[in-house]
Length: 197
Image (cartoon, rainbow, N blue to C red; front, top):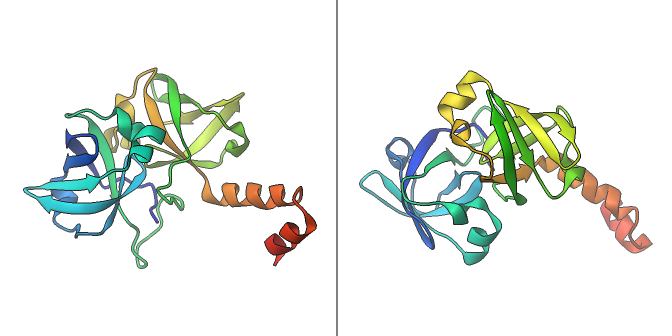
């Protein structure tokens, strides 16, 4: 579990099945097997050396997230897993990306992203873009807008985005569960009873 509050901007050294990220700040505290959100994707640390973290990635992950578009030199948002005694500064983020959205525009501090499933979009609702916890400003069709404050632009990679970029989208966990419960009303009575227990 994560919060969407970025700890460090890392730099990709090598991409693909074996991802290497230069991350001197968090590298000292990440151990083998620890979970790290890389642009919002929960990955398991496979190794660390010389201020770099190494992750093994599945082909499915590379295909279904924007991690497959990474190239050496790219900047990525990094966050270690939430500790039980930590403050929750953003919102509950699982690191399980729902889809790769498409950036339509970044105009001044307004980011506009198009997605395939608008049922999870709610004005003033939470959403995660490339691992960053954000609040939706408005929704128009299958696209939504986010206002980026100066701190977010400085401490994450979102200010580097351009029209046409793919970004990792994780919808609000609570909204996703609510949608599942509402969908259960259309299911057979036995399944409805399981959801209501």
